[in-house]
Image: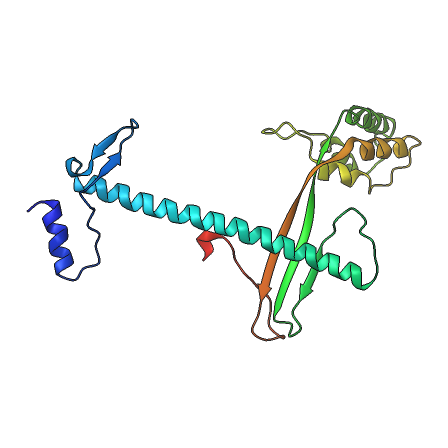
Length: 221
């Protein structure tokens, strides 16, 4: 009994299986066409189910992308409408917001995160921090010295300086005449290279319950 006959028998028995059609052609790895009747049933089965699944995934991707654009547009519509209510003018920089339904069972959050990097001014900041460290040798707390020493370390994989570590230096008060210059150089060396918008949604059954995030990740559904 060959594969085609076995699948036909399984269908006859009421099993939910797939019978690959033998008519037509199938594209091969070299870019040519083979007659389906000359290709093994197991290969046709693998091909047809793969194509069906991938085409479904592509359709889902396109649907999610379109829905994401619509959700973002709804968020912008909310901002414009709220501005109109209070006769306010947009500032040019988008901030985040959180809105809830009137029954307090649904919540939407919109946020914008900036990507930051350092430019050439960082060499001046590094030199000033080193000068402060040398002048105050033994006069500052060890944790502050460790903070200053590690602030300019570069990531082994990317070779980039961690902006968050740099920003921490500005929160430290060091009694040195050049420390304000060092902080200013750090501030000037950090620039925004891009931004990313995020939309998050939550739900709950009663107002006294905790919010449940609505997962949009394929693997979590």
